[in-house]
Structure formats: structure tokens, C-alpha cells
Length: 212
Image 1 (cartoon, rainbow, N blue to C red):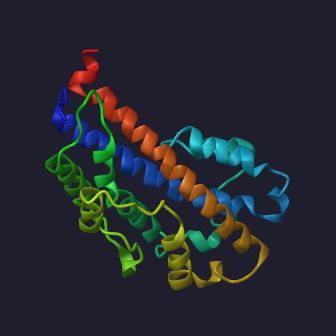
Image 2 (cartoon, one colour):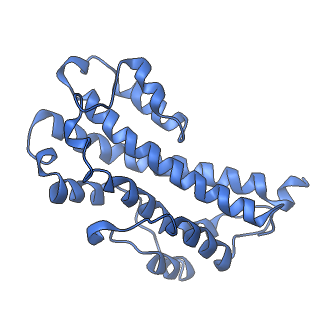
């Protein structure tokens, strides 16, 4: 795919993925804060609307009275839980080969362009902690090349993380069940929105699209 500036396009796509991961990371905390007994009257639909409306700004949820501090979600205010951010970035990055299915003015991203985006992201110190994300960039490339089906994005690795690293969040109680059930829906919908944003970004930076 031809870009007005390939370097800029690569950096902006990578930045969107990093920002989206940071936003979803915060969103898990807001969801957990929502599950406090005194916040049950707050509509989860409204929370979803805010989260999915802007993948780069979720802190507007504070307007609903939600706060992600040590009091509202102490189990998530730990160095261990910070690994979720890296895992989110990794889980998004390994799916970059699916962007080859996006066609803009008859052009698609090349293997080299997708590799460049992936390498740029991974240079940020991103890691698949505990190998919890089952997918890999290499496997995804093969799937796309062979036109095989890609399993929809889901929260399985996140729930496995909680069982492994934050067992207090995996105990059976009202708050944890609310968290597990909500992330199952949120992660799937969030990634679908991310795909839309990535396609829109590629269109903005496409040299051909800019001439239309």
C-alpha cells in the first residue's frame, strides 16, 4: 500500500494500538470499580458507550462517579496487574496480519509493512507474560496467507491471567463474576471497534485514497 508518508503511517498505527491497549487496561479497572455495591445503579450500557466511543480516552467515566484508585479496585493497583497492559498490546499486535484483508482503493498492506508495524510495537518492551496469549504473529501470518478462519478476539487470556497472577480476582463472588462476564463482552466489542479505527487510519494515510 502506498502512503503519503509510510513512516508516519507505521508510527500512527502503532500508536493507536498502544493507546487502545492502555485504554482497555484502564477500562478493566473501571468495570471492576463499577461492580462496587454502591455503583450498581450506574448503567453498564452507559459505561460501554463511553469506552467504545473513544478508544483513546476512557477517563471521561469519572463523570459517572467511577474512579480507579486503590480504594475502589485495590487488587488492580499492583505491579503484577500492570502486566495486563503488555499482554493487551501483544494480543493486538499479533493480529496485525489480519490487516492484509483490508483493501483501500485496490491496495493492501504488504508483509514488510505489517512486519514494520509489529517490530515498532515490540520494541516498546512488550512481552507475552506467561505465554498466556495463545496466538502468535507468525501463526497469524500463516493463517492469513492460507485464508484460514481467525478465531474472534476474546478475553480468555485475560481470565487466565487473573487465575494465575491475581487469584483474589478469580474467586467466586459478585464482583468477580460481574468482571468476568463483562470483559467477555467488552473485549470482543472493543477489538471490533479497534479494527474499524485501524481501517479508517489506513484510509487517511493512503496515498491513493487522499487523491479521491
